[in-house]
Amino acid sequence: MKKKVNWENLWDQSMIKRARELGGAEFDWVLWDLARKNARAYRRREAIVDTFVGTAAGKVRRKTWEEFFKDVNLMVFNLHDLGVRNRDIILTQVPNIIENVYARVAVSKLGAIVVPGQVELGEAETKGLLELAQPKITIVVPSYHGRDIARWHVEYQRDHPSLEYIFAVTRPGEELPEGTEPFSELINPAMRDKYGDEDLDRMRPDPFDLYEFIPTGGTTGVPKLCMHSTYTMAQMHTAVNYGARGGINHYDSLLCFGPLNGGTGTVAAVHPCLIWGAKLVLLTEFSEVDACRLTEEEKVTMWVGIPAAMVKAVKSPYFGKYDMSLLRVVLYSGMPMPVDVAEQFWEMGVRPCGQYGTSISGACVGGNVITEFQDGDFRKVSYEVASEGKRVADALGCELCAIVLGSGIGDKAAVLGQYGVPKVLVADDERLANYSAEAYVPVLSEILKDVEPEVLLLPASLNGKDLGARLAAHLDTGLAMDCTEFKVEDGAFKAKRPLFAGKCFGWYEWDSSARPQVASCRPNVFEKTVVDEGASAEVSQVTPAVPDDLKVQVVAVEKEEAGKIDLTEAEIIVSGGRGMKG
Image (cartoon, rainbow, N blue to C red; front, side):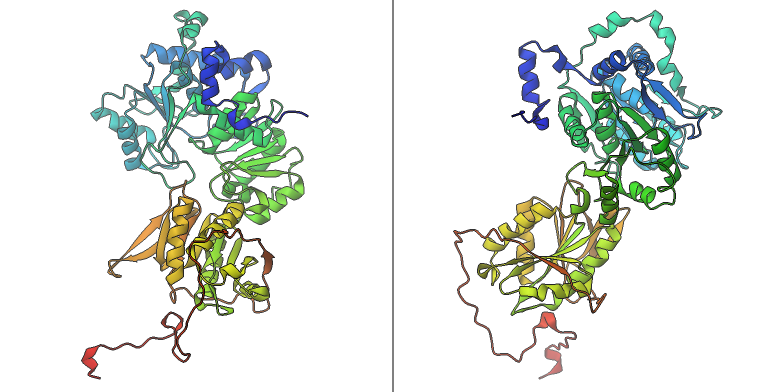
């Protein structure tokens, strides 16, 4: 039997340490070593195709592996000559272009640190990032969609002499910004007269040294001025895993949707292409027609980017116009892939892969709602949560699913289809007849592990408040309780809740690592909306993993005489104080 390769541990740090003890030099590799391997193995095969100057045939820039490696070495020599040494910081603020990749590979050889800054940042954010990073050198474009990036760097440099050099990447005919040097100086071939291959041999960076700061918490969300995550070369086994998931090999051609900052495009496109020697096509400015046309012309086999861009391309009239027959995998991250688009990919024989496990293909569930089932029927707040879940799921472009726990539910869950819920998961068990946190939390956790929702809404009832807090703690995620409004802005889910007894309100947003995003809905706030009176949800039974050793069990529930209305169910409440005198 063929032994299964454990991709997670292929470049595990403990294995690297052990290999170093045994003298395994290849385990000291950084990005530069991968580029050298490809230059030797594939030589005149295309390495990078770049659309920074334009997408027309005469404007596309192309580099073979030999040309790419030659330019990278020139950049290593020039940066070294400028005094760049171990742990010096090089900050880039450029879009999806060749120079971005050059900088990463050259910096890896010098043992320096690269900080990829978003080109979408404004002036205050850019200068704040520079203040945080304290770079020795920055590499920028003059401007990006009205943002005067180069000018902001020059203004920062006046008060911060620690920023020694600013290099600008310009298009043909574009004026070099005042106070900057042309990027071409970093690949000046005259430096070959001063340095040679023997100097490269003496540069031995440590793969355990810090190689990269990602300062924005990813590139698909709201920019955050924090050194959010770090990356060492020894941690490149993550890129090995992503590449293995897509089945990348040196015959592949990856189309990376721009702009490339430091998130998925780097981890799922740049690094795997360097590891396997595949061709990387950089689409600097995304457009539907260019994405589809380049897929045909460059014989693209994989797309890498965010689902929003892929959805635009798939739903455009150009998608059926160009030949997509070689496309076999789409690698994405950020928001989940909409189910209808994922199904369209599957029908084409294209496999959608969520890079960080947030949602893979048609199994993705963008929003889940937990309903409250009591006395053989749903409580009013359940319909409110279902209706709001429908609105949130539509805004996210994802499928909606409801989860119902209880006993004797039968087919009653199908009524949720009238409120826009297409699918309901039912856990029906006598031990779930009455709410018990000890029973409900593990059952729900097991269900959520399978569906991997982005957002989880539940009622802010007495039981819902207890369940929400316990469930969020168990899942190690964030909770916004007793919310009165939700919205989706730029793909980000946000929740509004009252503070200080309703004297003010606060908006809450979850960190990219906090999934699912758990929020509870205040009763009688959200409108319950019947979408289709004749609709019936698809009901699926799940086997609840109720613990056998429950320490607390609800034996019986004694209720008051009927006749009084539950205030949480009342449409109108009239209240009066002592001033009414009786």
